[in-house]
Length: 290
Image 1 (tube, rainbow, N blue to C red):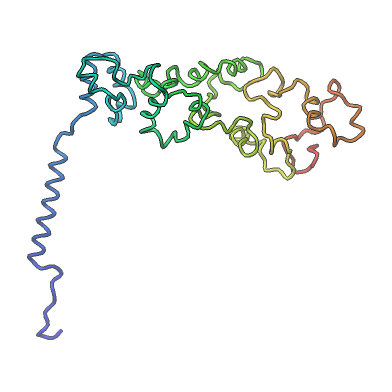
Image 2: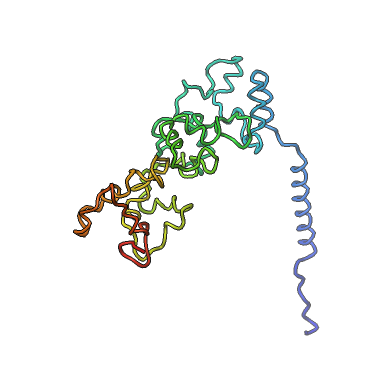
């Protein structure tokens, strides 16, 4: 290197001191912000409201809403300012029967839209039910938002369906092996009404051996779905079949393409599955014999 050329410093001493001062200033600001106590809005609301609603405030303290610290009384109950000013009164949104479902749902969906975006398009939303029909924000059990807990909340309305689970062939709902929500999502449109086509993938989550893939597929299983032959809630028939006779069930579809010599068979003397043992699908036989 020539004598008249000096190496340039990366940062001048003045700029270095300025940069160091800026870093210290920012660090000090962050430390001060971290040391300042944050306004406990939830605690303030619960304390204020708890002066009159003591039992509700205590129950709220054991719920997920309280645990995350993101919700307070005034977050959900609109009109609380006037309510406090008047020392009570009917101006507040109290989630009572007189309050419209649309108004109540709007409050809940303010936070829960991401996980329940299709609720209003589903059967519960279309029936003008609101979230508090099944859920209690002030529930005392922190892991149970439903008023009566899971399936019990469903059977409050769906008693006709629940009655089927008392039949001899059924899914084991009462034993706790599964719940209604294992198969049904109450917050979405009822796309599983017939469980046909790709929607029967829900059944195959448990009944994996019936899904294949098969070289020869049973058309009714793949196109119309499992409920073409089975009632998933329960029946008095073997294997939860929709009819007591297997032959009657098969003949309800296979009435034209049967070989002539099948005409001597009847539902009293014939069990189709004695020969067609692979009715869900086969890799060896297109008539599901093996």
